[in-house]
Every structure is written in C-alpha cells, then in structure tokens.
Length: 115
Image (cartoon, rainbow, N blue to C red):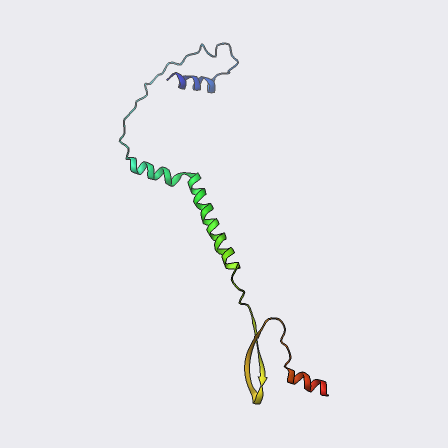
C-alpha cells in the first residue's frame, strides 16, 4: 500500500516541493480484492500464444525456411529453352530445342556458298 501511495505522490505532486514526503493520502474507499480461480492450462496457452518474442521467432523460422527452399531451387538446372521448326527432307518438320539463336544446317550453308 505504501508503494502505491509513493507512486501516486510522484504523479500528483512536485518532487522538489518541501512537503513532498510529508504528504499522506486518506483513502475514501477501501479497495476490495476477490480471489478468482485461474485455469492454469488456459493461462499458459494464452500466454504462449500472445508472446511477441515467440511470434517473431516463429515468423523468422518461416522466412528462413522459405529462403532455404528458394536457394535449393536455384541449384536446379534452368529448363528455359526455345523451340524452332526446321523444314527437313521432303517437307517433314522436326522440333529442335536450342538456347540462343538457331544455327543454319550444313546443307543450307553449302548451297549458299556454292552460289
């Protein structure tokens, strides 16, 4: 009770006042205290759910796992490719997958050089 009176004195009065420590408060009402039953399991569960440090740690673990999955994905080969259809013998078409620009077939380049 004395500690609460000191706190109230600090809030209300000027600490540099000469009568700061000699001022006392008379309670007009007596505080009533009731004993309440506490469900310990529920209280612990609520406390753990609402702890910001645990929430932040869980979020950091989730971010780290996402980063690990991303970095692991970056080690896989890149499957980007481009496809072209080149006319082959007697009008047949075959798909060729190449990266970069298509190369001319040797048959075309020999005909072009013969001209």
